[in-house]
Image (cartoon, rainbow, N blue to C red; front, side, top):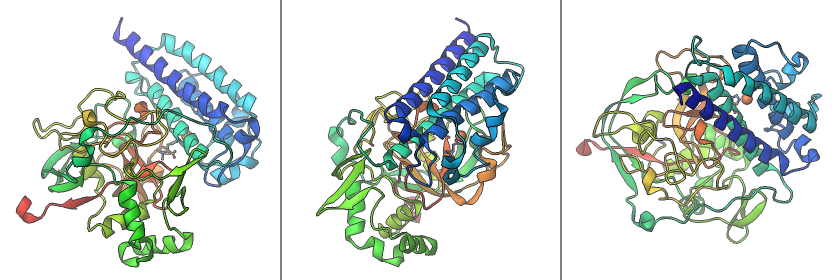
Length: 438
Ligand code: AVJ
Ligand code: FE
């Protein structure tokens, strides 16, 4: 088999995996549920369904394949910049059966195109980039659709086996790990399907610091609540406190007090699991917790150094465990389970510094604003990253149980507003090493 044949097979498998997930998420509820808006901050599921097909048509059939538009009149409906999410239910959207048919048509033509693709001559096709970008795009919307499912009320529609129990050593792990100071390589210039905001690779000098070995657990977070953390402005930034007051925050989204903390997960209510990473907290809450704990959120550079820097060789790895793609033994990814695994899980996926679960389980808020790396150029379109750069978005790292492996790596950057809680976000905390530890 030639390298091109292997790439073609990998692409076909990734496109198929994405479509299987999309089909699953849009077939477990009825048409009325697909059309309904479950939250003003989310699109109706039927919008995501046609939007992924429309992006696939735009990038693979039109840009790569040079084909003429199939239905140019629907393009504006599925342009995320023309209509904010709250307006989308009122648009003359394709009905579920039409949206599925459109996706199927596009995919059939893409598979024909892929057969003859040589992956050379243009930057879009080099290494199969545009195909990888579209597989990632559909999987990103599959994650968004999973968040819509979590916001949806009514009988449970999704289920999955629980993650494996915590390994024996989880209870005796050190609370924090040490990451030595010095330069490391952040970002990538070689990962073929890395998106523009992950590029280029560049050296960053990171002073020595300590990082939590695992994400912050529900039990630890419940102590913050019980200690009056939500009522003490000392722990909050001014913006965070104003938001806490305005929004009436008292606990993570989907938590309810019933004599004990109870959490609703995809339509099922159950007591909060103490050793599970906390989920559905805003950046403001994560930041306040860290201050209460006498610590702080890690910067994005600290997070990536902990996850990728191999102190033995000085190289940055693709993932905490090395350069190999994720497997179920090293990380909780891909909606295989519909919740994070207990803190301390996946010893085989630990980073050289000893931190666990940096990839998978929960997205981790960092203290950093979403900004371009030195030497950044927008590619292939400004609306993926560039239009979002600036202080109003905070960076999240590491992916979650909700994220496909194709859209997750040590360099991958996600971002959102500091008030957002429907995303599958938790966090871990850090502290700078005192001078005597340097
Ligand atoms: C990278 C998750 C912030 O959902 O807004 C999907 C991904 N971009 N379609 C988003 C994305 C265009 C993006 N995030
Ligand atoms: Fe999109």
